[in-house]
Image (tube, rainbow, N blue to C red; front, side, top):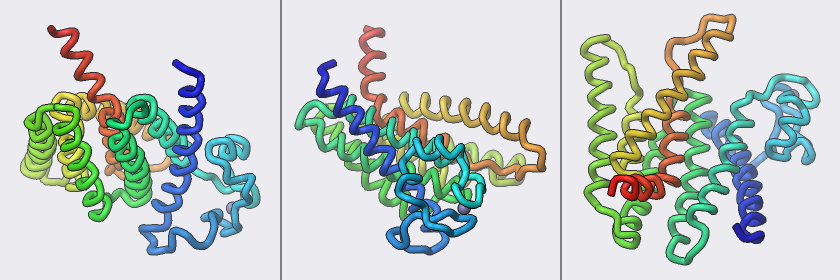
Amino acid sequence: MPEFKILFAIFAFIFGAVFASFAGVVAFRMPKGLSIVKPDSYCPSCKRPIKKKDNVPILSWLALGGKCRFCKSKIGVFSLLMEIFGGLGFMCAYLEYGDTLKELPIFIALLLLTFLFLVMAGIDHETHDIYDITLIIFAVLALFIGLYRVFVFGSNIWDHVGGAALGFGFFGAIKLIAKLVLKKDALGSGDIYLVGIGGFIVGAFPLLIAIMLSTLLGSIIEILKIRTSKTEREAEIAFGPYLLLGIGFMAIYGEALMKLYWEVML
Ligand SMILES: [Zn+2]
């Protein structure tokens, strides 16, 4: 890899972490109806403004051990993870789609998608809810990325349509069966839209892998969390962040994966 590319990749990571930090602010304030631009970041517990030097993504969290400098109240590990995944999202999008002018529209769309996913994951984490407005923006981005891949990169439209059908159909069926058999809501309808729309971006096969990865990761982490927590937890878990991670990963690497798959198969 040429040196300038490594340098740009590092820049991309830093930008991603900074935008992730802002996404965290949006996700915290939007459900409460607060302004997302004013005031500057403050501690949710003691309301004191966060100093510039304590607002450096990732590093500040590590330096302060995930605690507010003043009141020592805990800042969840989730915000640290958001900043790390934001950095990785921007960096991987650059490494995968940052080379040619033809790839530029996909690269920009993937940066927007990463930011949107971080906001959605943050809101889901805070409220166990996925907002309609974020799903609408997601649908617009998905339509753009999917159609660009069809008309410019020459991928098959039916693979994208099939991905959406699989997502809506598969998750819709699980929800229906759970409703009939268990008489309760196993999945939020937001999750169904998430995999349905995500399926249009990545196509059927990568969507299946994304769902499997998210389910596996989600189960392991949630079981560990239940095992280690001393208090009784609510039975309902926010599955959205895991799905977003899986779909986001496939939005960036799905194409390369399919190329590899066909090379091995033929
Ligand atoms: Zn504080």
